[in-house]
Length: 106
Image (tube, rainbow, N blue to C red):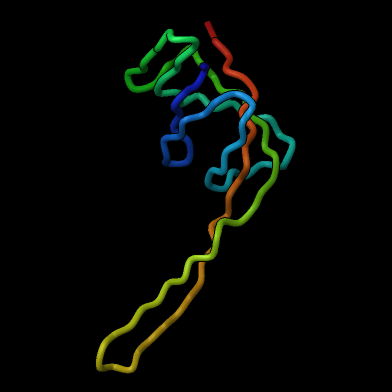
């Protein structure tokens, strides 16, 4: 089983080749290839490499599939005894990435 733990858009994500993941919005067009270089851990068939803090010799090749919005969140604020209420909604912009391969750079 090959997997990696990467840091992308402020989150740590467990990724595997051939799967897609939703991350915070990345300003690029669908179909663009992106290389992620903040790899914290890499496991290739039981051989585990841990970075301090990142592995400099590994890149993750990904492809942007599409841009989408996350689920709707309701933000409700109220001040008691003041008749002050506000209700707002929020949908986070997301980017769906397909992890293609792990590339070793020497």
